[in-house]
Image (cartoon, rainbow, N blue to C red; front, side, top):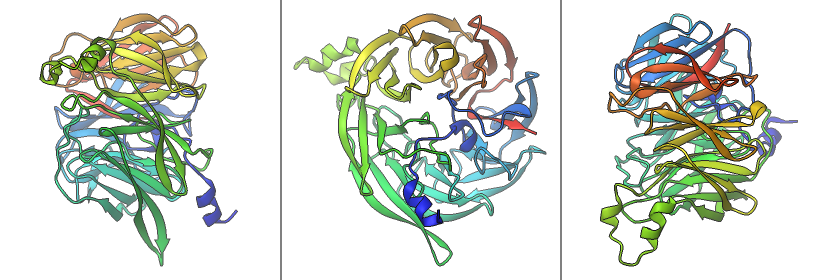
Length: 446
């Protein structure tokens, strides 16, 4: 098979985001890391103490504490994806216009990659060997060659923006590779998804706009078979697909509830084929009341954050700010179950070996554990004390081992890394790192 044929034939069904991009969560536990030998290590960005912490998970010890030059080090990931042969990390400093290059052996910062925007999230393309980085302050994205740590192309609108929909002020959402040579950037201010095609002409990388799709509100991330939506890269082993799902976050100011959009990719263009709103039942009546006052709803109206596709490829689990986990049957695009979780219900991690789903609640001090066979909540497990910092209670990133024995995440607000024994559904070990680590990556170091 020629390289050009490979580019045409491969499309995104996902890759283990934890190991392929700048911070991710291993929410789809049916996949395993490229390597499961060596020391399981996690790296997190601490936005309070301006550092990146490294933790040896097996011994539950802090192994490195790297101060960053840039401000707000939100996340970190392997520069060249899950294989990590370059032995370096990229630190994402969301308030500084660069990436920080970190030597994984010495844990020292060896340089920076200057950008035309501040960085938000990454998605690695294993086929082209390019890292895609979206923007925080501008609806832009940069393509980086990790071999040289150089920006090879930049796309998007070179304008400072402040989106106002539910998802916050970041100019973009999570970038995504739709095929081996097509990626999408979520322009959250104007509520669009821009689609670009990458090519190499006379040794120079180019990225050209193919299409733009309007969305009802700002969109946060893509979901598809085989990946969790945190950082959606692409690898040589991915299986073709033309169907994706997107979380439209909702807009309290405009009285628009969040929704799941089903997208189809055909002839290099995206279109919305179906959608389903998932606003909280307690606020739906207010939305339907013609005499309602949206200004009075801002404290209670919900919004959507992250969704994850169950390993069965059919059920989509999505949390709402109001504290519900909703299960959407994607074959009929209807909500089939609503489960009470915690405020700011955020990310779902599946443990198929045990028929479990673990929900991190960004606004609560407990995680919610769901039996996916019965679709019922088993328990709310407290993992931290009350809020002590002005940061989300629980991290965006989580991880389960290949056997489904343990679950790992950060109680970010309290600065506590914790382990849950999935046989007893109890917190088995903790590590107090201080600060507020919020997002990162898990990897095996030789």
